[in-house]
Image (cartoon, rainbow over all chains, first blue to last red; front, side, top):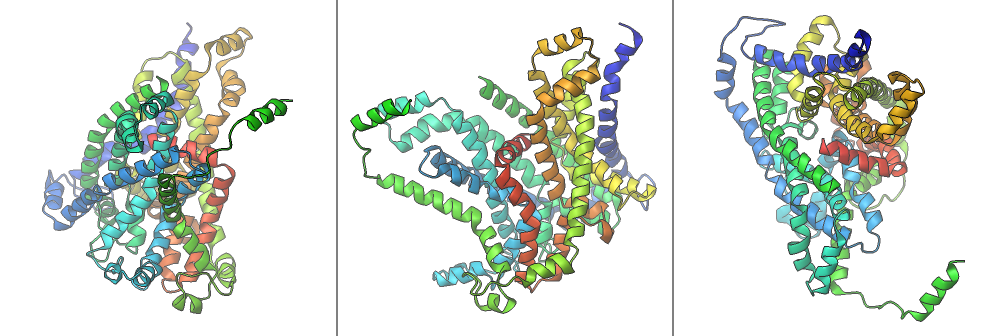
Length: 293
Length: 290
């Protein structure tokens, strides 16, 4: 092979490598450096682990972490609801194709739009509470948005509402790929609906459920910014009641101009996402194997 | 021709049982509840947008008594919604074009050429899909502040293009690998070079994958809030999503007006979804699997 054709592949991947190095490579190296520096403006002196000591000693940081972890509670609910709806759709009752299209709508709407709508719906004097009072459920007519006791739960409700749409479509896609002869055989053997779901369908869905669980963990820990930003009026509130790690980083860099602190938190979030990449890769491989098998 | 035997078969078969089991009714009810829950915010948004402010204060849940279109006038002609949408479209278009071009070249090399480091490049690129974007913003923000790229289209397009590229590489590489080898050999026999093969043969065959890619990536950029509010702080460069967050805060108490804004903001995506729902569902599923 001559010189030019040996170089050719590198010419093809050069723009790709350059783009990835700029948007991922440079920041991922730089957050480590910044996290050990006290930066004012664009640079500053090395201060060892001071930034980490500062954030670890700060209640607000731990509150943000706790809120992200609390959002994980939503995942079992999302899985259960998505499974129920997906399995019912799989029964192909009348109208299921239309239902499927409609049920995916929450995932099409942008998070800021839906958060703005939900914020108005869940106002203390809003339609949700009005409907609850009309149904005689006054005790449920809470101050969903305005009370720091409930604000995070309301955000969670919104996240469940939107992310479950993805779960339903993912699960349904898996169901439609199942080997139907197994369910048919179970039917012939006299297994009722619950038995078919429990013994035949669910075991075959394990991989896709685990997969959905892992991507949901990633969502809860690192992709809820738009929800809390809009619901909490740009600050994540009332007070710090919906403060999450992303909002913490956002505040540290944009509002307080503390790149060192923001980088230290970014490093921690990066390390957590590294931990999650391992199961994600293993699961994607298994999901692919199942699909091609 | 085939209708005759079918009709005959129908005639001989007994009519389907008329009774519908109680469990079927129960299942239908659960599904209708799911449909209702999925649609409620959209219905609320549209109904409220058509009410007057006065009506909304005493009629929050019901249908509007008189349809009022004033709020749409205000949104369309007295607020910068179109400018915001245009900004979002420029960013989405720019990022998708840049990322697609870079990814097509890279994915073609990874899938079809032999070179050192190609496995590493692919694995590294795939791994980047799981890194949350928020991790990257601090150094880029510091860098952009220093070199004056804050509030520029180029700066934001570069970041968006980078963030969506790992998924593009993943999708295109896996797709390019499924194309039959003979295709490439035949083209090479005819004397076609790699670029010609990519442009004339691979890309036309990859149209479904490319469409999926465009849907997922454009939607990602269009819907993003985090990058938009950090890197486009200038009012003139504000995107639709950043605009919405300002808009809904400014008119906190004029709920029908806010909802009219949301109707306009969500209209493009809802229309596209209705028109191309197959690509949306397939694309977003592929996007989630990333």
